[in-house]
Length: 298
Image 1: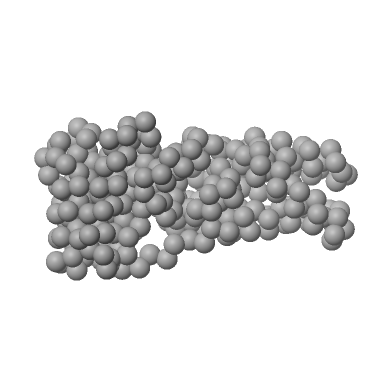
Image 2 (image 1 turned 60 degrees about the vertical axis):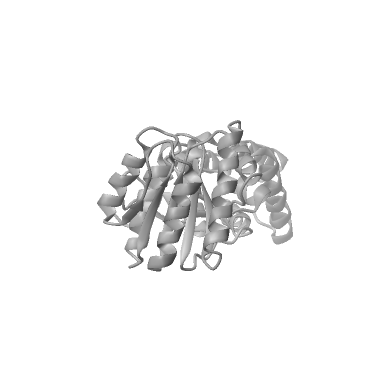
């Protein structure tokens, strides 16, 4: 299945929630104040958020008035252009090599699985990849990551459960530096923002990378479960207090009608979506494309 087909499948529920309502609204005839009010409600119901939805509708209203828009196609195309513009406010990170990617997030978002997919993604680009089992908190986390390492035929650096995560990262970074590894991907324990000790652990990991391999290109990506909707915003804000988040990896898009949250994130936090999970297999991850995303929900 091609990437466009995968994206379309993953966004099916979001498209049903947004496009169907939008088409029904556009078939109603006159584009007036009631239309814009109803459109705002549709956007909010798709988890785009109140402030972001209002801004989108205000821009559309001004554009429609200025350009004398009348037809449903013209409205839809103008709305698409506004949504794409919002997403492109936060330009994607250009990953340069050697790269150290630390993957963070709350429990249950699919971090370890995502890391396995990322390893495959970079392997397909002929990059040398090493994984670091920095989640020493969750039972069997190291074994799970080892399974992904074996499936991808990549190296893994790990210690026993309960070891200081920063010590594992130190070994992983030292190994990557010595072997001139292209991509080092660090797994971290899933943590709620209330777990202060685990959040502080992220700071330690960050310092180890800076100290031991300052010449590497360092990235921190947060994995977000798309089904959490607006809660994703508070997760990012809380993690950002401890480490600088560079971008987002969005999972479980296929399980939600709340894919619209990416617009609120781009608007409010100016953070790009870097990768999206598009299914269950090891191949099902790809870089985010704003135009493709918008085309598949409207």
